[in-house]
Image (cartoon, rainbow, N blue to C red):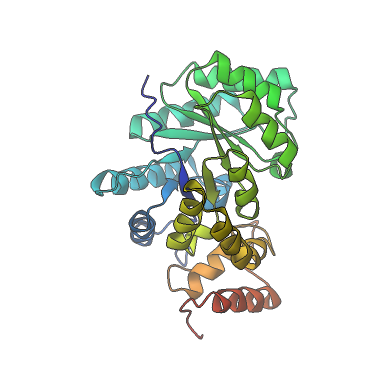
Length: 304
């Protein structure tokens, strides 16, 4: 198995996906955006929730992963590419994961099945089926607020013990006690990453290894530096930065993700704020809040 996870730590960007005026993926803008993330030192997470994967066709899903892998491989930094490949249909998740493996990703991020509401036994069987079909690292993604289900720490523990390629967990439950239990129950090389920017400080202080971040779409260098402070055990300095960034962390979810992040990207001249239905753009009041938040961080925004 190809289980090199030495770079599965630090700040990863849950990449937003640029759309053109027709709502199609904009290849050139996406490539430029990825290069900016790589220069900042971020790992790459294409086709996640923040990337609007739920509204991508299979062909678009494949294209996004290919573009991301190509940019990563041609760079000097060679960042870890952790591609979203989850589904509530186990066969589809296997198919997406196999394709991602063929494209050369370093690992796959697999959301717990949504809508179906499987039991813990069903969740175990879902991940076991995928792990048996691919030879690259798998990161279990737990986000009950999106899926309506919650994979328990004991289930994560069993999967990590029974399948060598189930090597990580993206923690987006907001339940710090549960996240701490995952850290306690899994082996030392198992990687727990924060899935909430606002909880990254607490999760890393408990033994987490980094964050899959929405904020890093807008402030990649700063998120890399923030995580590095904690990696270096500079907790006092990290707490100061944590406090300074709380408004951004909060306001990126003032409406449904990724609409606030994409509006922020637009006023930073990175891409259009267009999102795909059923999501819509921000209300004027939310735009005002996002603009003020970015101005308070001394970012250079356009004045339109």
